[in-house]
Amino acid sequence: MKALYLTMILGLWSASAEAYTANKVAFEFLQNGQYRVTVNYTVPELKEFRESYVIFSKKKEAEAFYWKLVRGADFYPDDPKLVRFIPPKTKPTPW
Image (cartoon, rainbow, N blue to C red; front, top):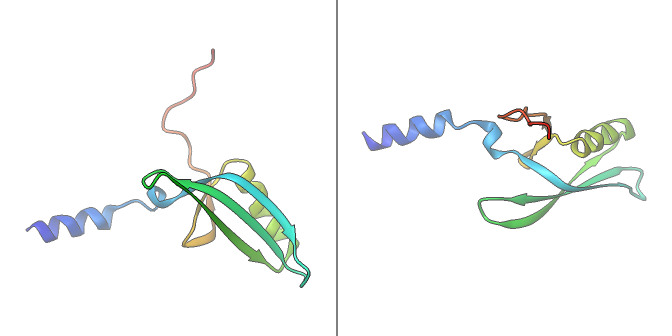
């Protein structure tokens, strides 16, 4: 019974829970004609900083990925080209 319950919980686990928001994003042109977008992010559960990068062969794709991260999109380290804008759970209150 416990195994079934655990399987259900893991099956319902949202993919958005595995997403991270970038702390710092850098765009580089490499000597071999490719583009690299480097992302620094924080893993809250482990309280540690990590770095990841994605190599693109087309400038247009690299720039689109870069600007999405700069504007606050969440990305997934397992599939870094998958980027989503997740709306906040509460609306900000003006002051």
